[in-house]
Image 1 (cartoon, rainbow, N blue to C red):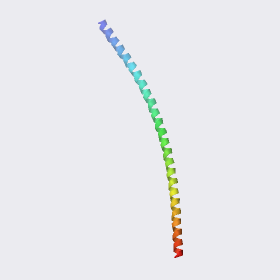
Image 2 (cartoon, one colour; image 1 turned 90 degrees about the vertical axis):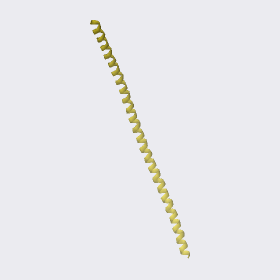
Image 3 (cartoon, rainbow, N blue to C red; image 1 turned 180 degrees about the vertical axis):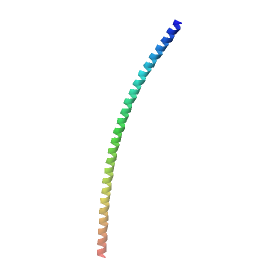
Image 4 (cartoon, helix red, strand yellow; image 1 turned 90 degrees about the horizontal axis):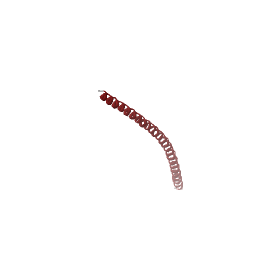
Length: 91
């Protein structure tokens, strides 16, 4: 009977130690995942900032190109009106 109890106690201690080792490993994995999550969050913030800067740059470029196009169109229309007035004065 003592042998059976000794074996059962030994198995219980081994199982308990195995559980503790498993929990320590699991805690290490959780810490690694937490660090990875924080790195991913930092990368997302950096990408969001870069995207906002790129969008602002594209908006400025589009506004510049649009205003240049409007100025060119205004000059062309002024030239056409000047030609129309010249032609109408000559007739």
